[in-house]
Length: 452
Image 1 (cartoon, rainbow, N blue to C red):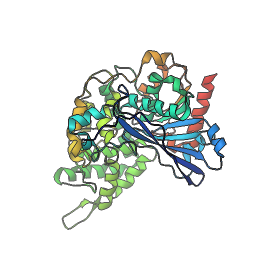
Image 2: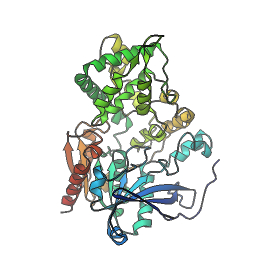
Image 3: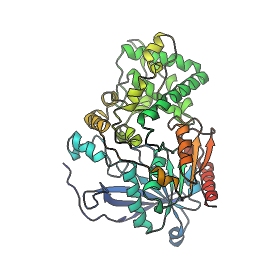
Image 4: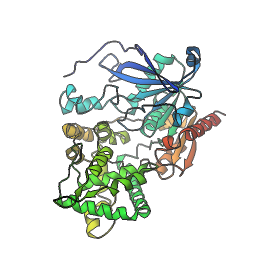
């Protein structure tokens, strides 16, 4: 078992600086408590990358305010920039940007099938991962802020799950915030809106998105039906070792949450079959591309912790997406094909069968089961404190977001004092990337208008 470090939390340590075209990048490492309620206990190491526009002097860089970027997920490391583009291009006009790998992701003490056995067995692993939710990430950010800036506040940009973390930040440490910018990241904050409620709104969105895709590409409905028939009778394994079952196939609907996702899905399905000596089989091109969409090798925490992001009432999530799916029989792909109906796709859901089909999750199956059964999850948001909020907050809400229910986001926007919204159907969930500079500029202007 890994030995715990109990040293005093360290500052950023030695900073390594490199140059890219138009960018100056610096690597930072921070030691923080695993459990912020036990600050003298075990430490974990976090990684963050500072990004500054090239051409600025050291004095100019020091005068720039900080913008902290919190990535979507859970379980995803921060963006790795190559040159100046997108939202980062706009941010660098006036900020030095910190791209944080949230705990367990990227280079921040990664938690995966290779590293988690160092903690011990599944029980120890689940207990360890119980400290990897938004409230702990916020406490990490506060320690980092103090070490970089002292008492000065910073601006936080949260994309998707990063926005959930930013709203938790408004609850737990608003004094650290100069402004908050949310991109598709307004969570349901009412404790009564649990994981079950989240998925009861999600499945109808998935159905709409699937049918809209088939309306755009009618032959894809036939291809998916053919794939369902094929997978019912044949064992197929993707290039990463994942078994492609019918429910796993349906998860290719994950692509429909991005602006170009419908087109990417269509091109993927175009290459589904190839003739062989044994009859039609899945093409290697399809198997490789499907693996890239479905794999959780790089982001296992997404599957292990996604449902816990909706848990703040003390109850176990108990595989909410799987239980709620039973309330929507239209998602039974085998029955749909037998009745010559379109086979519906799914998206932002995790299921217990993934622990067997997905190669990277098999070693973590018991750990995932313990997390799904875990009770006592504490509150992530304080609705009374958010109702008294004084931090400027701006949020872009995507009108028919596959991953975040619009009505939940609007209800939260009304519950956070002073929050200003931009509701649009111009972008999907990845709008901060697709809209880049324009989206961030609009959020910054909304937040500044809110100061008045």
